[in-house]
Length: 329
Ligand code: TXA
Ligand code: MG
Image (cartoon, rainbow, N blue to C red):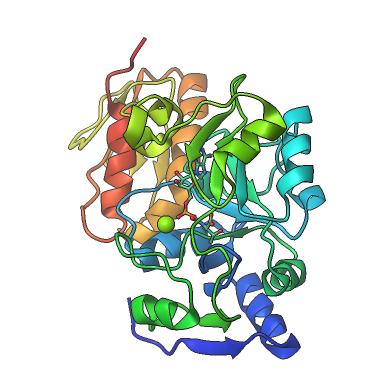
């Protein structure tokens, strides 16, 4: 990525308004929350979301959390059942993230949720973050504002240490009160599952909700089936997927990268110029479109042209590999 200056913005009204304007324009702005600093981008803008993965050097599309200024705003994008309303009333604003079903009209880019039907939503308990989210007036996707594999940042200086030159600005709101990430609670199924322990204790969640399945994917292996990064066949279209296609059969649909192979029933172009950032933006949309359009025109499968492993190509290949993996029953 081209080197550029990262501005440190003071957390006064002018700084918040500038940060919000930058987010609305598709730029990346890190901001403090009560847990850790987040690397924010407009969640409705797939290009901004792809730039988040790129700036972090995140090796695959782990789904991102969407941040809102209030529960009311969050529940405009996901379906809240009585359990969600109860924990939200008890712990929001605060260090709790809820995984819920997306609403059909949800404007959040598919890439934000890694193509899943669920979305992780959170309302931070931090006056500056709330002011920023209000001024931005759209959901803000934000993973922790560190390079992938490094420690989460709890000050603006930590963010600069890892991301200076890779993002537009950091809104400096001082150090973080909680210092560990939010608890991630999956309420999309019948049994609540704690996917990640965090700032709200599991005991407190159980006191509010009754029994929850505990343990991280690493600890028990169990919730891994709901934790997208770890599941082999994750985003599986209905049509079978064939990778690294060098030619295409008459009855196949094509997911193209660069100049398209001749033939095929229908074509979705990831990036005509072979740009992995652009391809990342279009990947989940492309798989969904080819699945529907391919079926409509009688295609028997989806052929995928090779995508290089550099840059976001690693994440793209990871997701394509899962889409093509043998389906478990
Ligand atoms: O405290 C926090 O949560 C911080 C601040 C910035 O808000 N954010 C954060 O984001 O830690 P990140 O991207 O580092 O962690 C998001 C976690 C990941 O473990 C991801 O797999 C999980 O949430 N997640 C997000 N969307 C999900 C979904 N739809 N289903 C299951 N897990 C999801
Ligand atoms: Mg993180």
